[in-house]
Image 1 (tube, rainbow, N blue to C red):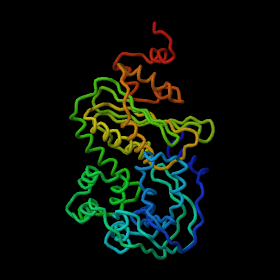
Image 2 (cartoon, helix red, strand yellow):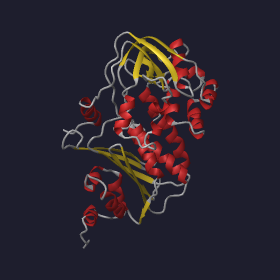
Image 3 (cartoon, one colour):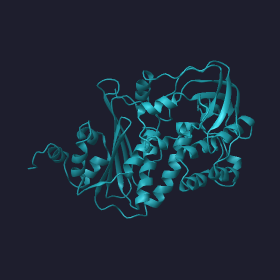
Image 4 (cartoon, one colour):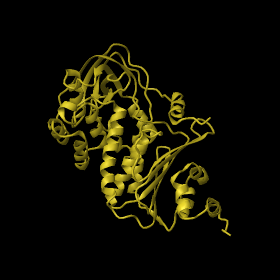
Length: 396
């Protein structure tokens, strides 16, 4: 029986929990600034700051947009993220005006790291890994938390005090102003964006997908007005034990996300996929938040290039891969869209070229795909003909 993606990711994460430094019940350090809002027991959730055991500027510890451009390895990321200690208290998501929520808002909107002190009800333990959120180290219930006052980031501050500005408009404005995605997401998560009567704390993983979706929807409305690309284009990028191939088709918008997990635990080759056609997707994707992170990064790139295209994205997560959050997908696809593209006259030629750098045979991707097979049918090209071309066998 085929395993679902959620079950598979839980299985590969269980044996890879890593370790973090030992923390006492009392801690002095800095918050990057960083917060985490859980989803368990919603609408009364665990919420609190993430604190690093350093008294210095440590903003890069919670700025995923910086890690790949800085050349960080997976080990570099885990080394700093597992030092972050999560403090947590029960918080009603509708109480955005109580002292605990206000303190989280002050942290999330800060322009820099804040020196902090925390005392915990028990010694912080454990680590947290997820395909949805970035990893962090031990956690414990907060007894007390203090942080120095800091200056708000000006663009976030403007949106925070504009209580008539809808959250979607705030997110679009902040992205246009160059505010990092992670900062926008944290502001939404702590209830600092939107019309005042509708503000709520939003669990971290929900707020990530919400920001990806709102940005993607806005980009898509613009991309649909652009002219189509006139050739098949391929962008590629690899980092953090992943390889990504973005294949752009000379068609109106359609999108398919395909991801293969190869030899993560042993010899397994597990493939997951989902897609949408021109009108988009109504139901939540069966492959989770990465579908929306990839879509946002794709459409951001297409809007920047001033073109419209169908898009098929192939991802291979290879041996050594550890789930570290959907930033991995978003930032890798962003980097791919910034790379010079290669042009091909037809899809078959593009796939033959891409297959030279993929570990999984292209036949496996095609057999799992909806859009690839529809493209072959539309062009009256048989799959047998493609497979012969891939193997260098003349078509007769």
